Image 1 (cartoon, rainbow, N blue to C red):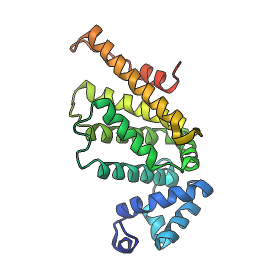
Image 2: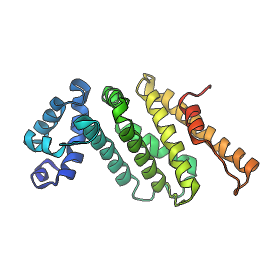
Image 3: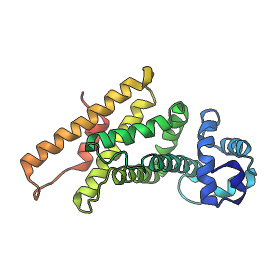
Image 4: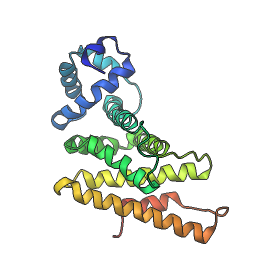
Length: 226
Protein backbone atom coordinates (compact mmCIF):
# COMPACT_ATOMS: atom_id res chain seq x y z
CA UNK A 1 0.00 0.00 0.00
CA UNK A 2 1.42 3.39 -1.01
CA UNK A 3 2.10 5.95 1.72
CA UNK A 4 -0.55 8.23 0.23
CA UNK A 5 -3.17 5.55 0.88
CA UNK A 6 -2.29 5.06 4.56
CA UNK A 7 -4.49 7.93 5.73
CA UNK A 8 -7.51 5.85 4.71
CA UNK A 9 -6.06 2.48 5.78
CA UNK A 10 -7.71 0.27 8.34
CA UNK A 11 -5.68 -0.55 11.44
CA UNK A 12 -4.97 -4.04 10.06
CA UNK A 13 -3.72 -2.56 6.78
CA UNK A 14 -1.66 -0.01 8.66
CA UNK A 15 0.03 -2.71 10.75
CA UNK A 16 1.12 -4.61 7.65
CA UNK A 17 2.21 -1.44 5.85
CA UNK A 18 4.35 -0.22 8.76
CA UNK A 19 5.85 -3.62 9.61
CA UNK A 20 8.75 -3.64 7.09
CA UNK A 21 9.95 -0.20 8.20
CA UNK A 22 9.57 -1.18 11.85
CA UNK A 23 11.78 -4.19 11.13
CA UNK A 24 14.44 -1.92 9.61
CA UNK A 25 14.33 0.38 12.63
CA UNK A 26 14.44 -2.61 14.98
CA UNK A 27 18.05 -3.24 13.86
CA UNK A 28 19.01 -0.18 15.92
CA UNK A 29 16.14 0.39 18.36
CA UNK A 30 14.93 -3.15 19.00
CA UNK A 31 11.22 -3.96 18.85
CA UNK A 32 10.36 -0.84 20.81
CA UNK A 33 8.21 2.25 20.64
CA UNK A 34 11.20 4.09 19.12
CA UNK A 35 11.18 1.68 16.16
CA UNK A 36 7.44 2.21 15.72
CA UNK A 37 7.78 6.00 15.81
CA UNK A 38 10.64 5.88 13.29
CA UNK A 39 8.53 3.76 10.91
CA UNK A 40 5.60 6.16 11.29
CA UNK A 41 7.84 9.10 10.44
CA UNK A 42 9.11 7.33 7.30
CA UNK A 43 5.53 6.65 6.21
CA UNK A 44 4.22 10.09 7.21
CA UNK A 45 1.82 8.53 9.70
CA UNK A 46 0.90 10.14 13.01
CA UNK A 47 2.75 8.12 15.70
CA UNK A 48 -0.39 8.23 17.84
CA UNK A 49 -2.26 6.41 15.08
CA UNK A 50 0.60 3.97 14.72
CA UNK A 51 0.49 3.22 18.42
CA UNK A 52 -3.25 2.67 18.15
CA UNK A 53 -2.67 0.12 15.39
CA UNK A 54 -0.38 -1.83 17.70
CA UNK A 55 -2.33 -1.32 20.90
CA UNK A 56 -2.66 -4.63 22.68
CA UNK A 57 -3.56 -6.20 25.98
CA UNK A 58 -2.39 -9.66 24.97
CA UNK A 59 0.69 -11.66 25.87
CA UNK A 60 3.95 -10.19 24.69
CA UNK A 61 2.60 -6.68 24.36
CA UNK A 62 3.45 -4.31 21.54
CA UNK A 63 6.78 -5.96 20.70
CA UNK A 64 5.09 -9.24 19.81
CA UNK A 65 2.41 -7.35 17.89
CA UNK A 66 5.09 -5.69 15.78
CA UNK A 67 6.91 -8.97 15.20
CA UNK A 68 3.61 -10.62 14.32
CA UNK A 69 2.94 -7.87 11.77
CA UNK A 70 6.43 -8.37 10.30
CA UNK A 71 5.78 -12.08 9.89
CA UNK A 72 2.40 -11.24 8.38
CA UNK A 73 3.99 -8.86 5.89
CA UNK A 74 6.39 -11.59 4.75
CA UNK A 75 3.45 -14.00 4.47
CA UNK A 76 1.61 -11.48 2.29
CA UNK A 77 4.62 -10.92 0.02
CA UNK A 78 5.10 -14.66 -0.35
CA UNK A 79 1.45 -15.27 -1.22
CA UNK A 80 1.48 -12.48 -3.80
CA UNK A 81 4.74 -13.68 -5.36
CA UNK A 82 3.59 -17.27 -5.83
CA UNK A 83 -0.02 -16.50 -6.75
CA UNK A 84 0.79 -16.93 -10.46
CA UNK A 85 1.03 -20.72 -10.18
CA UNK A 86 4.79 -20.89 -10.76
CA UNK A 87 5.00 -23.71 -8.22
CA UNK A 88 2.48 -25.95 -9.98
CA UNK A 89 4.88 -28.12 -11.97
CA UNK A 90 7.65 -28.35 -9.39
CA UNK A 91 8.40 -31.47 -7.32
CA UNK A 92 7.23 -31.06 -3.73
CA UNK A 93 10.74 -30.64 -2.34
CA UNK A 94 11.43 -27.81 -4.80
CA UNK A 95 8.14 -26.14 -3.89
CA UNK A 96 9.00 -26.14 -0.20
CA UNK A 97 12.58 -25.02 -0.81
CA UNK A 98 11.42 -22.16 -3.05
CA UNK A 99 8.91 -20.98 -0.47
CA UNK A 100 11.34 -21.08 2.44
CA UNK A 101 14.10 -19.43 0.42
CA UNK A 102 11.78 -16.65 -0.71
CA UNK A 103 11.07 -15.87 2.93
CA UNK A 104 14.77 -15.77 3.73
CA UNK A 105 15.48 -13.45 0.82
CA UNK A 106 12.65 -11.19 2.02
CA UNK A 107 14.48 -10.57 5.30
CA UNK A 108 18.04 -10.56 3.94
CA UNK A 109 19.98 -7.75 5.58
CA UNK A 110 17.71 -7.70 8.60
CA UNK A 111 19.56 -10.37 10.54
CA UNK A 112 19.95 -8.12 13.59
CA UNK A 113 16.21 -7.45 13.61
CA UNK A 114 15.59 -11.19 13.39
CA UNK A 115 18.04 -11.85 16.22
CA UNK A 116 16.24 -9.33 18.42
CA UNK A 117 12.84 -10.71 17.40
CA UNK A 118 13.95 -14.23 18.30
CA UNK A 119 15.03 -13.02 21.73
CA UNK A 120 11.58 -11.50 22.31
CA UNK A 121 9.84 -14.66 21.06
CA UNK A 122 11.96 -16.83 23.34
CA UNK A 123 10.57 -15.18 26.49
CA UNK A 124 8.33 -17.71 28.28
CA UNK A 125 5.25 -15.51 28.12
CA UNK A 126 5.67 -15.15 24.34
CA UNK A 127 6.15 -18.83 23.48
CA UNK A 128 2.48 -19.52 22.60
CA UNK A 129 2.34 -16.64 20.13
CA UNK A 130 5.72 -17.53 18.66
CA UNK A 131 4.55 -21.09 18.03
CA UNK A 132 1.36 -19.78 16.47
CA UNK A 133 3.38 -17.53 14.16
CA UNK A 134 5.52 -20.45 12.98
CA UNK A 135 2.52 -22.71 12.49
CA UNK A 136 0.62 -20.06 10.53
CA UNK A 137 3.53 -19.45 8.15
CA UNK A 138 4.03 -23.19 7.66
CA UNK A 139 0.33 -23.57 6.89
CA UNK A 140 0.49 -20.83 4.26
CA UNK A 141 3.53 -22.45 2.65
CA UNK A 142 1.84 -25.83 2.46
CA UNK A 143 -1.30 -24.32 0.98
CA UNK A 144 0.74 -22.56 -1.70
CA UNK A 145 2.46 -25.88 -2.35
CA UNK A 146 -0.96 -27.36 -3.11
CA UNK A 147 -1.48 -29.41 0.05
CA UNK A 148 -5.13 -30.27 0.71
CA UNK A 149 -4.68 -32.86 3.46
CA UNK A 150 -7.24 -32.65 6.26
CA UNK A 151 -6.26 -35.75 8.24
CA UNK A 152 -3.29 -36.61 10.44
CA UNK A 153 -0.91 -35.54 7.66
CA UNK A 154 -2.25 -31.97 7.75
CA UNK A 155 -0.80 -31.51 11.23
CA UNK A 156 2.44 -33.45 10.86
CA UNK A 157 3.36 -31.65 7.62
CA UNK A 158 2.92 -28.25 9.23
CA UNK A 159 4.74 -29.22 12.42
CA UNK A 160 7.68 -30.60 10.44
CA UNK A 161 7.88 -27.58 8.13
CA UNK A 162 7.68 -25.17 11.07
CA UNK A 163 10.60 -27.07 12.59
CA UNK A 164 12.62 -26.91 9.38
CA UNK A 165 11.91 -23.21 8.96
CA UNK A 166 12.75 -22.36 12.57
CA UNK A 167 16.01 -24.31 12.45
CA UNK A 168 16.96 -22.70 9.14
CA UNK A 169 16.30 -19.22 10.55
CA UNK A 170 18.68 -20.03 13.41
CA UNK A 171 21.43 -20.82 10.90
CA UNK A 172 20.53 -17.88 8.65
CA UNK A 173 20.87 -15.27 11.38
CA UNK A 174 24.50 -16.28 12.07
CA UNK A 175 25.50 -17.14 8.49
CA UNK A 176 28.22 -14.88 7.08
CA UNK A 177 29.02 -17.03 4.05
CA UNK A 178 28.69 -15.55 0.57
CA UNK A 179 25.11 -15.64 -0.65
CA UNK A 180 24.11 -17.45 2.57
CA UNK A 181 25.60 -20.64 1.11
CA UNK A 182 25.75 -22.35 4.52
CA UNK A 183 22.06 -21.65 5.08
CA UNK A 184 21.17 -23.01 1.63
CA UNK A 185 23.15 -26.20 2.29
CA UNK A 186 21.55 -26.61 5.71
CA UNK A 187 18.06 -26.18 4.26
CA UNK A 188 18.75 -28.70 1.51
CA UNK A 189 19.99 -31.26 4.06
CA UNK A 190 16.92 -30.82 6.25
CA UNK A 191 14.52 -31.20 3.32
CA UNK A 192 16.41 -34.22 2.00
CA UNK A 193 16.33 -35.76 5.47
CA UNK A 194 12.55 -35.38 5.64
CA UNK A 195 12.13 -36.88 2.16
CA UNK A 196 14.19 -39.93 3.15
CA UNK A 197 12.33 -40.24 6.43
CA UNK A 198 8.93 -40.11 4.76
CA UNK A 199 9.97 -42.72 2.22
CA UNK A 200 11.28 -45.06 4.91
CA UNK A 201 8.21 -44.48 7.08
CA UNK A 202 5.87 -45.35 4.22
CA UNK A 203 7.78 -48.55 3.52
CA UNK A 204 7.90 -49.68 7.14
CA UNK A 205 4.53 -48.62 8.45
CA UNK A 206 2.19 -48.51 5.52
CA UNK A 207 -0.44 -45.88 4.91
CA UNK A 208 -2.86 -47.04 7.61
CA UNK A 209 -0.37 -47.59 10.45
CA UNK A 210 1.41 -44.27 10.77
CA UNK A 211 2.47 -43.40 14.29
CA UNK A 212 4.91 -40.50 14.36
CA UNK A 213 6.43 -38.67 17.36
CA UNK A 214 6.39 -35.08 16.08
CA UNK A 215 8.15 -33.56 19.11
CA UNK A 216 11.04 -36.01 18.89
CA UNK A 217 11.44 -35.47 15.17
CA UNK A 218 11.39 -31.67 15.47
CA UNK A 219 14.09 -31.95 18.12
CA UNK A 220 16.27 -33.78 15.64
CA UNK A 221 15.68 -31.08 13.04
CA UNK A 222 16.60 -28.29 15.41
CA UNK A 223 19.65 -30.09 16.82
CA UNK A 224 20.90 -32.22 13.91
CA UNK A 225 23.76 -34.61 14.47
CA UNK A 226 25.16 -33.97 10.97
